[in-house]
Length: 67
Image (cartoon, rainbow, N blue to C red):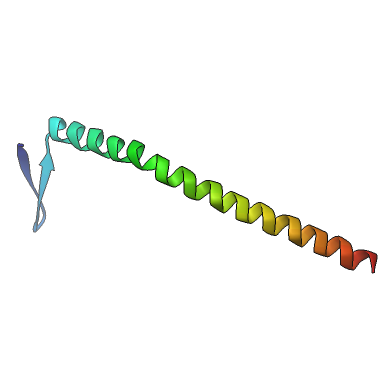
């Protein structure tokens, strides 16, 4: 891994080369794809809870509107 030193004012910054950047992006995409299964289950449960809550709220509003 090759870092190119760059000095901006008093701050020294290491800029990675293009190959390192590609490897980091490949790893990030692999991690993202592998965690989508876990996220999908959680989003399904969240959607179910929200839809049940919305249905209860609407039925409550209709009941109170008719009274």
